[in-house]
Length: 165
Image 1 (cartoon, rainbow, N blue to C red):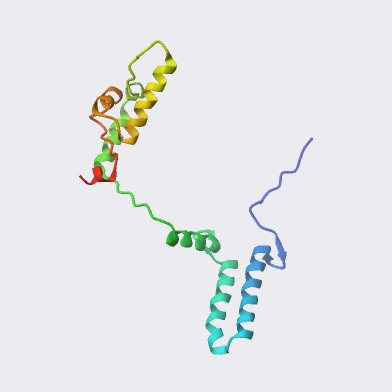
Image 2: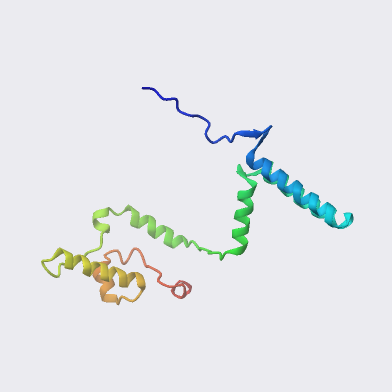
């Protein structure tokens, strides 16, 4: 049995003449707000707002920025201005040490976990506990030496204060 596979599913259907449903809503909304402003405000006050909302409706309907709809660009701009920003600094030494560490084979890059007992579950829980303390920055030097054979290649920065030193 053969089935016909739909094609061009990314293309929206033209419902209102040459306009899609979204384009029709944007233009109708801009025209409606412009009409309400024209009827309720004096003409010299309303004209700038009518131009603003009419232009916004037209740009939402037809304008694309970097190949994406304008509404998505407005959303990204809104979140950029309202949310916290995270600035990352890339140190060339850290990049070089990461490249060196990546060239080491995976067998030698795995941390050494000493066998404390005959139980594999106990050994696994011990290694996870040590890794948690190392990641949290509360492990002492002895724990780090036991787990990390690559201590000369990569020096982890645990806090922002350590990075500034």
